[in-house]
Structure formats: C-alpha cells, structure tokens
Length: 308
Image 1 (cartoon, rainbow, N blue to C red):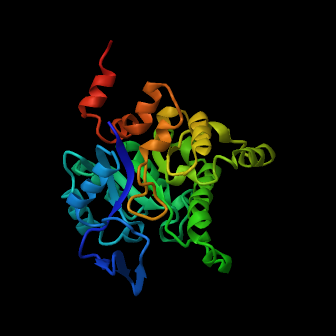
Image 2 (image 1 turned 180 degrees about the vertical axis):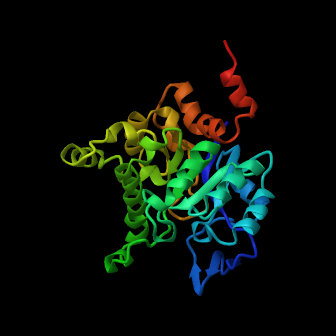
C-alpha cells in the first residue's frame, strides 16, 4: 500500500483564499499571493484524483504550514471532517499549550499534529516546549515538523529560490539540532517526530554535532539520538535517499511528496523503487511505516503483525 505522509490542504474560513486564475492556482493570504501550489489545494475529491495519477493509495493531509496554530479548535474540526477510507489527517495545536494535543489525541479523529520548525519563534529544544514533548510521548502522537518558509531574513535568500531550496531545510536542521543539543529525544525516547525534507542537512552535520558533545558536557550520544527521528523521502536524489535509509533504517523513513507544491514530487514512490531495496524494506517506506504510526488498525498492519 502506497501512503503519502507529506501532503497539505487548506480548509476554508481561515483567511487563506484559494482560486484558479489564469491557468494557475493562487493562494491569497495576509496580503500576499502564493503561486507555488501547483495542484489542487482544497477539494479532497480532486486531491484524491491527483493521488490516483501519482500512484498513491492513501494520503496523510496536514495543514498548510502558514495556518498551523490558527483557530485551532475550528481548524481541527474542519480537518477531522476530511478523514476517510483513503485520507488520514494531522491536526494543529499551539505547542505551548500541550493540553490541546492531549485533547486532540483523546478525540481520536486526528492522528497527530504538524508544527512549524520554529513555532512562534521558539526553537524545538526550548524549555517552554518540554510539556508539549511529554504530552506527545504520552499520547503517542506523530509530530510532523515542517519549516515555516522564509525563516531566515537574509537578503541572499531572495535570489535563485534559495529561501525554499536552502532556507526551508536549513530551518528544520537548526531546530532539530536544537532538540538534540537540549536532549529532548533522550528525555522522551518514545517520541515520534517526523522531519520534513529528509531532515534537511541534519544527517550531514551529525559528525560536527557529535564532536560538539565530545568537547562540551554532557557528552550526549548524538548518533544514537539522531536516529530516533523519522524522516520523509522528499529529497529529490536517489543517492541522498539511499544514505538516509542506511543511516536511519528502513523502518524510520516515510514516503512523502510535499503535495501540492512546486518543490514536491509528482510521483513520490518512484524514487523509493529506484533504490532496489529488498521488497520488505521497500514496503515499509512506501506505506508500512506510515500505517504503523497512524493507522495501526489497518488490515495491512495487522497482517504484518500476525505470527507466521
């Protein structure tokens, strides 16, 4: 079963207007027009048609990151209404209000939450978020960490689309490294934290991060802690993805497309199949891992768990 775990949707009434104009989709939000969402962003029926063309069986929809934390209760109700046989949904919370996450998971209709890499300007290892991480561990929520876009106010980022190609994964890298340095994953070893875009540059920097812990207390095992993250496949390079599978293991890599954006992948399963992995490992990445984390009652998961 093919499950796209990284796809976005806009629900109406939150200040983001979506329309098709002059042959393209335009998202108007806070006085700006965004034209990077190339495929259907709002209508679930049409989104599923797009998923059919992509060869995807089920999709995990989460908010457009600009709407994370906006009108939480109202947005989560609208998101929960989208769930169906082929649609799993992640909700939104304000991370400094962990009771929202507890309530969301108790309700059971949403399978976790998406949060920005730097919610409200707070990096993810900050003490203000410790109760949120404790609640995420206790409830078993999947926490999908996604860059907020244009997180670095450097003039050069406005050139050559660098705010997206470099800035977005760099934002995730910095905040995830902040989690490592603060020992969040050591303190909460059962967390399920999914990093967008293959974790950005975090895997490449693991040696430098480990070296820092060799020269500064408390001397954390950065390599072991880093492998507690989950990462998606949105890296656009087979060899980069091969390195991620080797580093994290096939049970911690999840298929993603970054639908409906221009920097996403139109046929996300192809890069996984190009790895030539053993069938059981390929199946985990293509959908087994997502179903295990988000839909343990799915027949596919139950069949995997059934004794031989």
